[in-house]
Image (cartoon, rainbow, N blue to C red; front, side, top):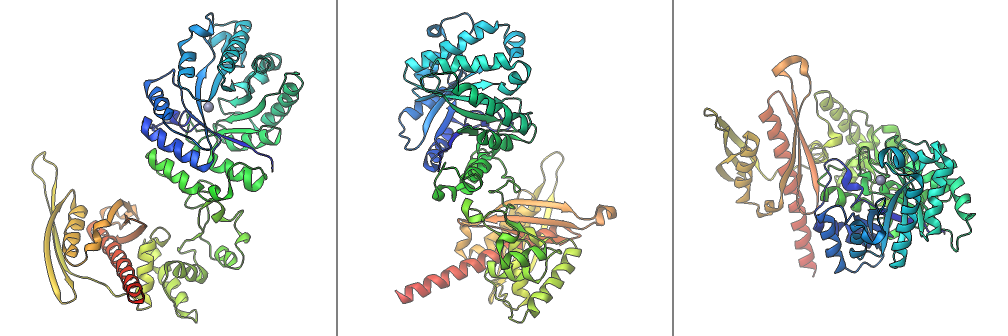
Length: 540
Ligand SMILES: [Zn+2]
């Protein structure tokens, strides 16, 4: 298998994305993680442009990377000065990064109109800079900025700029679709042409070709793929496609495509199986909600909803899956909704560990019940936790660990002070009754706190459980305030996230349903874990 170099620029180009920023320490943790994944190059930042990136490279000096070469990014020398006098280049050398990516201009429009430069001086800037960095022992990656635009408008000059970099000893020439609007057929043809041109230059060693694409025309990944087909051997991109405007080529798609579809060697199979985790780790660090529909690694990438599909994948997953979810560390999910048939319910019940009657009667009856509830606004494909409880209730396997006797919620508003909410709740656990009161930021939070406090006396396991998301949606807006609301709650503990749902004309009632399901789910889970521990202790 031929090796394809993966060049990650999440820490540099990725941070150009709106709302994406990393501290120097966060950059370091991401770099370590990429090193651990076997990514060949990690571009850490532009040390000449800001102190944070300078700080990152200082931190990185104390770090040993096992698989990754760290790259620093910068521009060619300024017009009219010597390389030694350019502080930007000095910062690149001082960064101590073994690889350096420098960008130069390939497009006449930028050279003359934007930079106010001459075409000749631009060529000299490229040659001098590459030469200087090579003389300092760096691996030089030359980013031909706006290459495809330049090639389209003045092919001869665009190729001249590449020649300047190659002749000065650049190790790589990377063709950049900086504005991100080029079409696959143009990128493929231009890359093939450049390959012949560079190999015909007669330099001691022809530089390798790389590709750097942006997603403005929705073709970043496709353009990287066709460039590889035309001879590129290094692919630039970012994790989750973060980047300026519409983003960069998404490495969480490119890596599996290179390996699984095109047969290139890039990272190991074992590391590929950690790709979903890497994607989540980076979105978590960037404080971004992970996109469910992201190919390969998204939560919905292998989710099946239609009954016919589910029936088919139970026979053979290839019927509706282009690749196996475990190769990238993802998993198949079956969604329960009114589109569902018996197969979905059976599959899902098995996934959640709930036993159904063997004759198919239970699952058919549950499907009918789900359809009925979904008519009223429930949505079980986004509420696994409530679905489990529903099935348990239906099959008489639901043994609640607490019962509600009553609750009262009050809200007080004084002038321009924020609302103060208070809840009192009375529950029964076995024969014991418990009454507690608590305050909260809003009625649901007060109710959650009161219930948690009441249950806490009986179940210490609740400590690790917390609410992470609370969503309210009006289901039918036509009836004004009489419309029903759907409340979705997402909760988590140390090892799991689960969702529960409630529907009612009253927002507090809907919230209570979702809240109660969430606690029932957690308590049942904790009880099961305790039983398993006891059994193990007895056996040991
Ligand atoms: Zn870029």
